[in-house]
Each structure stands twice: as C-alpha cells, then as structure tokens.
Amino acid sequence: MKKIVLSLAGVMAAVAFAPEASALPVFARQTGMACSACHFQHFPLLNSFGRAFKAAGFTMVGAQGKIEGDRLSIPDTLNINFLASMGYVKSNQTADNTGVSKNPGNGGFYLPGIAGEASLFVGGRVSDFAGFLSEITLGGAAAIDSGKLAILPEIGSSGIHAGAIPFATNGQGASYGFEYLNTGANAVHSITNTVGNALGGTGDEFINAVSAQQYIHTATAADGVAAVVNSDMGFINVTKYNQTGMATGQQGSLGSTYVRVAGLFDLAGWDSALGFQSWSGSSLNDNGGVGLNAPILNANTATATLATSAPVAGGAVMMQSKAWAIDGQMQGTLGEMPTGFYFSYASAPAELGGIQNAFNTGTLTRSSFNVDAEIGVVPEVVTLGAAIRRAKSGVDAGLLSAAATATGNNASDNAFFLTATYKFAQNMLGRLSYVKQSGDYWTAANSGATGDTTYAANLYVLF
Image 1 (cartoon, rainbow, N blue to C red):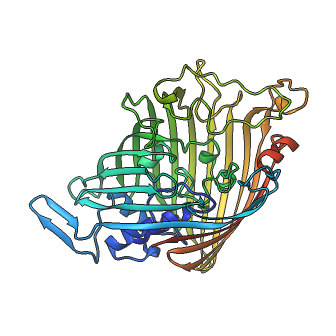
Image 2: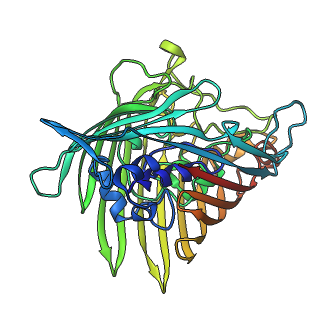
Image 3: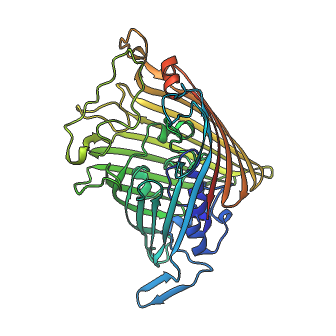
C-alpha cells in the first residue's frame, strides 16, 4: 500500500500531469507494502485492497513504527516522495515556428519541471481515523497544488467509515475529495495517466478518449468539503465546493454540489462496480470566464459568446456547475491475464439562466460515451489497452463552416485510443500512446489548431 501513492502519481504523469494520490511511495513507506498490493496491473488503477486503504483515510501502518500516546498515533517518520514524468510528444497540429517555445506539432521531448511533472508529495497517517495528503509542484514558482485531510473513523466494528474530507485542488475537480473507481471519474484514476498538457497545446486528448467525465472537463479547480460514507459495498460522497482551487481559493459560500454514489459487487468472479455522478449549483470560477473546454472555431467564424456574470474578486466569475455521469468497471482475469473493462457516459448542458456552465462553453449539450479495455499480456509487466469515444462536442456544426450559420446540429467528436505499458519496476512505468480523433468537429482549422492525431512516449518515476 505504501506504493499505492507511488503508483497513482506515476500514472498521472503521462504526457503532462495532474496528480492525485493513491499511488505514492509516501504510503508505500507507511504500510511497508509493494505497489502491486494496491494496484490493478499498474498504477494508478486500484484493486480492492487499494480501495480499502483509501476508504480508511490513508491510516494503515505496516512496517513503519508509530509514536503513540494518549490520543496520539502517528508514524515515527514524516513520509515524502518525489514524482517525475518525462517523454516525447508529437501531433499533427500546425507546427509553431515563430519562437523558442514549440508545440506538439513540432514534436519534442519534455523533462521534469519543463512541461513534465516534478512534484513532492507529503502525507500519511494523522491519527487512527484520519490521514493527510498534499502535493507541492516544483519548477517555476513552487506551490501547493492539492491537499486533503481524510477524517474517516470506522463506526464501531461495522466496517463502515463515515466522516468529512476538507480539500482543495487546482485541477482535479470536486471528485478529488473521494474517489476510487478506475473510470476517470477522477482524472488520475483511468487506464491512461496522460491527463495534462505537455509542450503547449491542449494535452488532454488521451484522457478525453478514455473517460466521459474528463471529456466534459470536470477536472476544474475546486475547494470544499466532502461528506463520505463507505464500506466494502461502495460509497456515497456529497460535496459542497467552489471552483477556485488551491492557487486562487477565496473565502465564500460553497455554492456548487457534487454527489457521487458507487456500488461494488462480484459478477461471476469479476471485481465490478457501477456509479453515478451529479454536479449542480453555481460558484466562483477562477478561470476568468473562459471555460476549460472552450470550442475552437475557424478563424473566419463567429466565436461563441460566454454568458457569464461580471467578474468578482480576483478575476473569478460566477459559473454554473451542471453535469451528470454514469460509469462502471469489471476487473478480473481472462485465462491467466489480468483484464479490466471500463465504461462511462457523461452529459453537460449549455448555459443555464444566462450563466455559463463551467463544463460546457458551447451552445448545445456536450456529451460522451467511452469504453476502455486493458489486458496484462505479461502479468505485472506488460499491458495493452484500447478505448473508443463517441461524443457530441456541444458546438453547432454550422459554426464550424465558412458560412458560420447555426444549424442546430451538434458536431460529433469521436476518438480511437491505443496504449501499451511496461513496468521497469513497480515505481517506474513506461507508456506508449496513440489517439486519433474524428468527426464533424475536426475541420481542417481545428485539426491544425490542436491536432487530431497524437503520439506519445512517457516515463513516470516515483521514489
């Protein structure tokens, strides 16, 4: 379990990285357990034991000693770990030949702290019923990127944990408070750990291909409190939050609500789960009025107008939080090969009541259906994975044409994703990734702006 943290972090790194914490050496050191104890095939995917560790609030201690006294129980060492990602990215977008900084259209390498991830994670047991995790991003102006305090005491000896998790994150969304399915319900829990941008460009084409929740960009900045009840049958998470995050958090009411319900069950020997997510309400958004998934339109077309209220303190604006999703997974073996199947569907309407939806800056409903599979062709060493996306972009297809006339036709936005991983060690993961995007949305201008085809080779290291 100690490597639970290690793994998770590594997976986020993929092409650029938005970390979380379920696979970090911080916890590996605390528990004295190998990464594979908590992870399914490779980090950051969690197995049943990894879920249990997270469900108990990161409190398990194994080989590591404890300092104990009256109402005191902490590890005898403050645990910390380093996460680094590096690699090469190439897309078919129009190359940038105007300056020193290039984009993926040029193709290029990235290193820790230079387009790649370089982060310190600090965390572990706070008491027998609470644990902490924080991430400090290095490079440029070092800053705390995410943090949470999981206060989840067990109710008697029932196996049910219930409590609160105050949290703040610059880019993992309301689900950062508590999540452990591998469907991309939280960005770092999926078959790809490529969740951010590298060398400029959008950089989210891989995670958007495997997760519907991430396609509608629910990984916003967020700060709030999650009320959680969980057991080995699943969990309920009701979160009140603001879309301001760690970097620009402000005091104020938590006007948005996130609800997550997930059920765990055995299906013919397969470790299975089904879940539902809902985002509602409105709150401050630190993105200056520009949505995280703003449509890219041809230069000669009219751009969509963001219907937002006037900016408030710090340049933030009031924005809607409106979306819902369903997802599920099955993890087991085919023959001797560990195999995982995952699906997700998510939908976010356009603006409501004149206030822009943070998850959809288009004029029509944005939605996606994603199906993923990954098989361990050499168990615990090599995996092969694939995913497909069938989505509606929320952009009126008529606005993508030279005529720029609204037609009411929701532009399709599909994707095909292939990946392979190799574990050099339990805390070193190499990954090859390919994604091809297609559909009405991918006009020549849009393909030139961000690229509809991307290749990446990544290496993630945690220690």
